[in-house]
Each structure stands twice: as C-alpha cells, then as structure tokens.
Length: 300
Image (cartoon, rainbow, N blue to C red; front, side, top):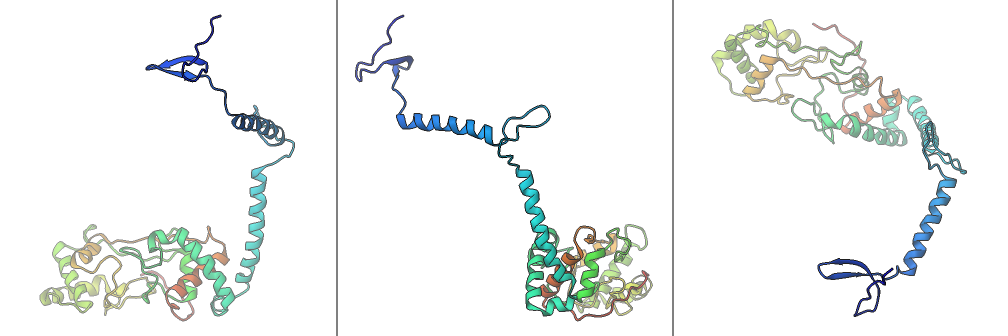
C-alpha cells in the first residue's frame, strides 16, 4: 500500500483528488462539528423511539409518547366549537334588533361578519362591500329586495336565483336574443330608459317606446319605472346602475337579459352566523333600512 502524498506547503496528507492542479487536503473535521453531528444521530434515535416515525404496511410506529397531531387538531377544533357554541348561543338568544342595539353583541356580530364576509362575499361584492359592475353595492341605500335586517337575513338564507326552494327570483327577459323585440324596438326602449333616469334622449324614440315599455316592462318596473322590491326589479329613474348606465350597457341588458345569482348560505352557515352577517351588512351600509314586516309576493 503506497503512502499518500503530503502537501509541500502545509505538510498535510492529500486525499488523492486533484482538479486543475489543485489538490484536496485531508484535514480532520472540526471537533465542534463532529459533536453536533453525533448529537444529531443521538437525537434522531431518541425521536424514533419516542415519537411516531417508521411507516409500516398498515400503519406506523406510534412511539412511546403516543403523540398524535391529528388528535391534537381534533381536540383544538372541539374546544373552538365549544367556545363558538357559547358565542352563537348569545346571538341566537337575541333578536337582530337587540344584537345591533347592544354594543357587546354588535361588536361580536361584526367580528364574525367581517371574517365570514371576507372569506365568502368579498370576491363578488368587494372587500368593503362596495360592489362592482354586475355585483350590488352593499354600502349605499339602494336595495333590490329590501335593506332591513330581516330582509337582508332572508336574502342570505335563500339567495337569489340560487336553486333554494324559497329563493328570491326575478327574471329579466332577453328581449333581443329570444326574438321578443326587434333591434329598432330595443334601440327605442334604450332611449326610453335613458329618459327615465333624467338624461337627454331622442324624443321621437321615447314616444315610440312608450307602448313598448307599458306592454313589456311596466309589470315589474312599474308604469313610472320606479321598480318593485316585490319582484326585485330595479328603479330605472335613479342614477344607480348594476350593469352600466351608458346606452350600450342598457341595450345589452335588453338584448341578453343578464340575471345574476346570489348563493344560498342557509346550508353552509349556522343561523347565528347568518344573523351576524346580516348585522354586518346592515351596519356596513350605514344602518340600512328600518325593520318592516316581510311579505312575499308571487312572481309576475
């Protein structure tokens, strides 16, 4: 066995590896590094014995400590559910008006509502409920189906065109796409709607569309165009527009009849969470509207 080469400069043996004339020295590892390395080995052996570590054909070694992250998570969730149950009991024992009037209950409802709204509603209505084109603004005083606490709660429960047995339902016909009206009639109706909102419009077109509006639109939007909450029909005389206020947007609505969907949350949220969310929306809208007795009306 031949002796290994020694480096002329340091006198240390080389490993025999060389790259581009550079030879690797066989220096011993630092003692502190070796102790850490040996300590890691000892720790790993102890971990294998005490904690779940080795997989098997039908399970794993549980370890002497019987530690289970799954069991810890279940325990924490059960504890959280217990705390939430106490909070929900407080909300369920009070009416919507009492929750909003009581500072402590309102603060709790707003905390729950903020979290739930951010996770489930903000994707459509915006982070602050300000809405966007095609999605209602929940911070103004315009409500298609009513802005009282009871009406908001009911809308959250059943949704709009959601498939729920008691869903709120309205239908804007696709007058152009379904051949109910011709192109020139849609153009005239567009001018009529523009005039309803107090903007300059073609007077001749408005005159021609008067009978068209009465025959096709007045049943839901009312003869004067002020809309009807019984049918979720928007007010056409104000300056609030869900899908746009320019002539192209109005004509597009008449042509294709856009009908959005509001999910039903009754099966997903507990009654207490829905109450908290209703309070959140109501307060976020500056107090919404005063409570009224809700009366369901048949669709036209």
